Picture 1: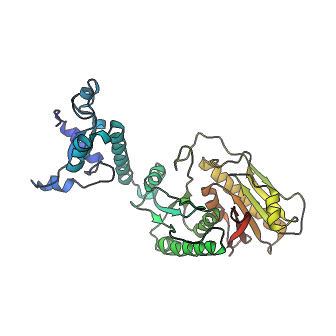
Picture 2 (picture 1 turned 180 degrees about the horizontal axis):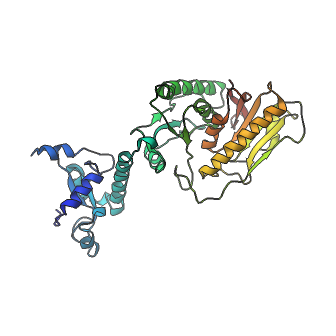
Picture 3 (picture 1 turned 90 degrees about the vertical axis):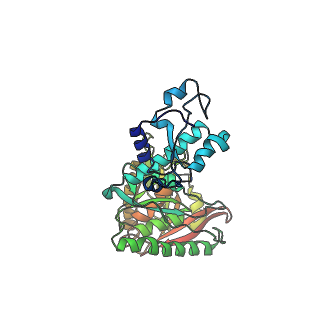
Length: 377
């Protein structure tokens, strides 16, 4: 049992920070009702020390225990069950670092929800689909934590456009037909209806999926409502933008000579796409336009400014392709892009102005690029 009497103001502050809920990870039990009602048999909240207030207590320390005894950063609000778990039943599993992480997660979440400004509220789209043989998981907490200070989640849940249980493989034509149609149905029901009703005024998109489906999602989003598309970084593994990183140097190139074959658009930021691979797919007389990065790699897009530049460069390139090849041409797109940039490809494309696009996907099972989804007015 704690021996230190906690100042009433500190107690009130802890109850406020925790929103009167148990701060143990995964619990979130509401402890306010019993406190207000004064039920003698109720489950009340316990103000627990992370580092015990005496050296011989749980996680106690001769020097730090007296120093932290009344420090709110060393206090957690816990339900009876978890108070007993962290101090007695499973003491060895609850180090200081573990409990500090739980406290931070809980109080950060409460601060986000309580700090929502209506003008900055954004509805969150979470889109995940199978990538090869792996399932792409998009964690809700990491999504919400990546949004402030510019935006806050408008509600405590995400709009999920996730497809699970698909038995088709991505080298099969039916895979792309099935996935595209499912995505369109989910989008119409879960997103478009709410936009048309005036409920949704801003969207934040977090997506991990094969690139043709990301481009399709961008096409569905278009410019019907203001949208922020986020990028998942590999190192560190986060959805937060890394503002301190160097800017990307983009390169836009036109075909070396006018050819009479198909029209190709190479979009290569995450990896190098050699022209001979495109020629093997569309023939030796293909006209290859490109938008690439100076040093492509799979974690290249780390600043929102680079994403904006990419969109501007792509818009100019689509206009030039149409001016050169005319209204009857079709653009064959070969993407090697960060996820957010792939979504932006679909958003940049304008149904009434741009040429139809056929999106290709690099597939090892098929031994090269395969045709997947068509985007047209």
